[in-house]
Image (cartoon, rainbow, N blue to C red; front, side):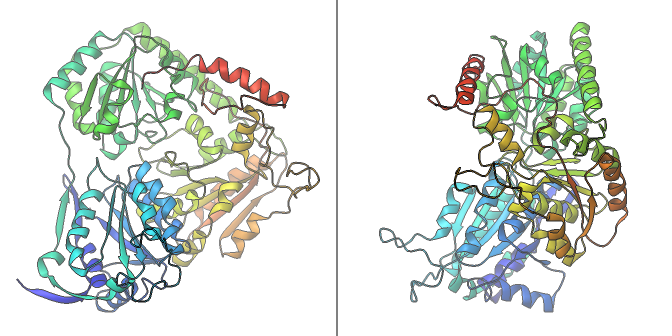
Length: 632
């Protein structure tokens, strides 16, 4: 067998450049490129390998510079969502803090079932120079390094301690990255000495390799049981999750609900499964749901979960479904999720194929006309609520709902809305009117502050025919905004709408509901005498100036009665801009809340307190707990 003499790093980079994911007639690179910040650990390994390729074959493995390892990994995760998990990036980091900066992103990828390949450098396998700079030593276990922290956060973990291990490690990494039921963060640790060691690599390892997406079919008996249950149901409903989008099941779902009349609701990841104005789309369900979805859910006798993991926000902390006889049919490629809610009918199968089979088997079935009329009325009621929330009230500081409405009206149908944390995801889940199956990109499985800017960059990389519109509050912006520099460097265009509310608005609201009166949530000078941040003067923060210092085009919307009109004009100007990112800065009033959808989210309240507001919150909490069901 012909071989080539290469370093381990050179073998990894060239191997990754020849991996392809195949889904039907779609064939794309599995690893589109590699992000890297170099330091001791990877500068002489993967860094050297990438440099060598940039000379011999510049297009084989594109390299992208980052500013923060978490930001680089978040870009890769966002990119993978936009490609429906068919393609992602590899991310290399140096030893120690460079590697551990990616821990949060590993959790983001795994909780969201999105593929990313993390290649953190590790300390010397030979231990000759121990302890090296940035090495963690544990006296009780000499094999431990900081990279062991990735184990509970990864769907696959390996450490290449000898050059010969590179073959099995990388093949297993690809296996997990391309498996819909297994995918998430894949972490392969690379000791800095091993990265530079030489090995004879078989040409077969470096040849093009295809990884075909598995689409398992449901068992015939499970299909039959599901059909029987649906036919008996009087008030069935659907909860569409991210699996609908990842399996290209949008058209299949639309056909299914149109033929059966069964209404659909959406988790955060499932928004886009149907366009907002589809007659059977009742919008979001659960804690951040619409009144339409939550009122129908309350009395539903059958819930068809498709590609959802039933988070507490989706279930309203298990209060959404109050019918004592409610049953669950779960369609999910992952058996772990398919059995949730004690589902008596679990279809461990691909969403698209299963929906198509159910549609055929249910030929002639349709829900009762009075049920269709009921949910149609609820949908219209909620649409009116949203219309009213979007009306410009001409306040000096507009509400977040007014800002969302103005941004919504200024976007094109194929634009991608990006968000992740704070009060925005809850409001967007209820209010955003999605018009494209990939038009809503809200990371809410881990709800990571700081995801937004990097994700906007990842979306921009994935599809340059769409505008990515990042909506982010000042709290999340301050967590991680440095990837704006990467966008400037590569002249990648996306729009950031930065909402300045001078604090942590979401936690501030939550703090009020639990009786803690917004403690520690305002951006003000510390008052040491009172031991708080609530009573001092407001901090002189200028985040627009921060973005301008990076070279970003910034449009400031001044406070005043014309702020929403000016925001509309700013969006038009931003969308016309070419050659780099744009940031629109606008101030809002965090105390004007968006309309509620009658959902609940459980956050425990202190059972003993001297604060009167906490006592009141506890009483309300106990009342809500009475509605909680043990159907999981």
